[in-house]
Length: 410
Length: 84
Image (cartoon, rainbow over all chains, first blue to last red; front, side, top):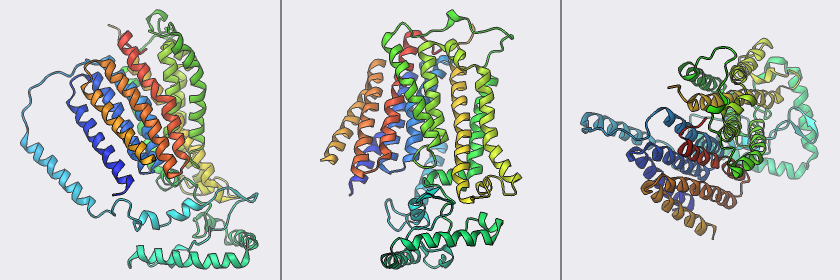
């Protein structure tokens, strides 16, 4: 048993114990806090699996905001779960057990945990991990594929594709190493120039089709590449879902105020009498904001992206609202502004898609953003799209906090 | 050695979890959540050091920056009974 597996099993046991405790515990306070612990443990599981982007989301959402929002719901509900006598529903238990068994049966077909022959390790991903974007040696645009890369057309996928591809790759790597040893680095420059010429001759449309040798089509962070390009539509609608959540909370919980009427000052419960909190909050907020901005704009290169960065930004504003009271938060960030920004974020995302359509491409076909160098389209488009996601997520989270924390007039 | 440290931290996590589940008062649980956050930061950094990936530090920074806000929110709710 490897160390990773041992750590994983201990962590998963702790996760299961926490999950049972969340369901069992009567006090809703305790349940909220235990769910915070649950997400910390889950983040550790993701970290142990090296899935940094997921761990990042779990850290940003679970570590910061979700517990605050759960406490916010406690403002509107009771603090203890009502005791109810329930009988075991045998039919439901049977259906649940059967569903679980079917799911476990389904996992038997999946590659084993850490299997080096799993398709994820062999198909395309190694090349995507190794690629560079934007500039190498000061030259913008298309770059040569990494050493050892074979075009996909040569694959005979149906016939034992895993082994075939692995063998092909190993073979090609050896060949390329020999070639590289013979030619040195001079060969690379020539190859690049050739690639440029061929692309221009092939014409506009072929250049956008992500030709087999095109490694600038995808950004270094494979996860972001999958989220924002391969399944960019899904991510767009996920953003729309978050926007809808914010909009419905506004519809359900926002009190109608007459124009000009503001929250009365004396109603807010601020913590400004706590010196440590006040000073530390002022010291921390700039760093949280900078880190959030870094996570959003760095999403296509490192772990993170719009969702995570947006949540981190929102956490900074929520901290400000917690310490200085919500009227002060409203002064810094008026409700009207967050509402408009939430809409603008979704519009920015879909606007990029419409823009590429106007340029003659498909919806969200980033290569059409800048026809002069289609290879740079994806990093550029993704940065824009991540900003759209980030703005919407940040403002919607602040809106949700605002609406949940707002004390109902009794 | 790093493996030993990791497992020591895992034992620590287990003990914190016991306190969080049993914890007679709400303050025990708050302390448990807080300690859990600290342990997570260290464990993430350790795992990152063992596997030699610098991205792990980003995650540790996220935790250090934002996990204390939860504690503040809970304490404020206990003291004032509201969040706004």
